[in-house]
Image 1 (tube, rainbow, N blue to C red):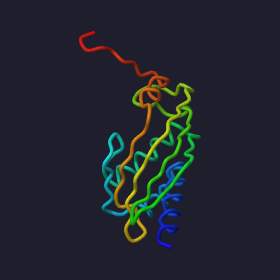
Image 2: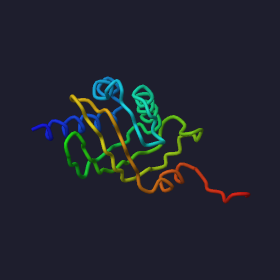
Image 3: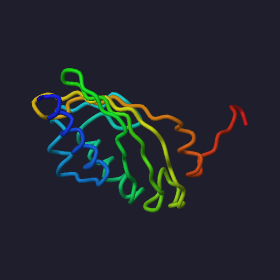
Image 4: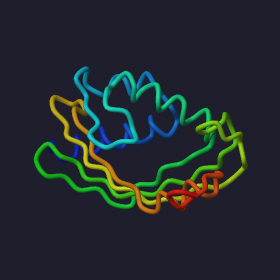
Length: 141
């Protein structure tokens, strides 16, 4: 039963993140929430700000959950993100219309119906950044 409840909390979190529903995100993230995976910020307040900023940059981005599993108070999510950089500048890069696609893995620890910790990883970060206009330069060039 608790497993099903935790999965539903995570589904609500993913949807709220996708829509930058800050009221729901604030409800689901515990006051002492900690993100352990940069570049996303470490604290609850910073994460809420980041979610709003992300939505202003990628106004129609979507998250699709492909798989979810639980063990104790942990929920494991494997999913996919698709967005178009059609809003505000991303790291000083003006809206480019570039499509961004990546798979992600997130581990969330819940306690008392709240998300208290997050770990995450995305594949092909360069494949996400290059279409936005980021370039790689060898050292010394």
